[in-house]
Length: 104
Image (tube, rainbow, N blue to C red; front, top):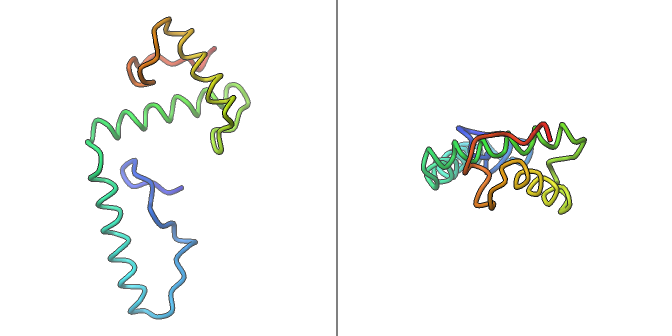
């Protein structure tokens, strides 16, 4: 998945099949507009928090030999359990505190 400033590219290159240069130019403009909409849909701090949460989750998955995508329901449950145990707090969001449960 390609990212632009932490926002997934709505249409990865491998899915763009075009019939003409004119169509390609039109699709490129629409693609950029979609990217701008996606980027503007969340505040910068929210996107930063999402990136940090994703990095924490993927690090935990690597440390526990789990696949982050597609994440199995038990992988998510194990991660949230480890997060709750590590922080000894009720879970509100993974970004509520920046400590990492990766070593659990």
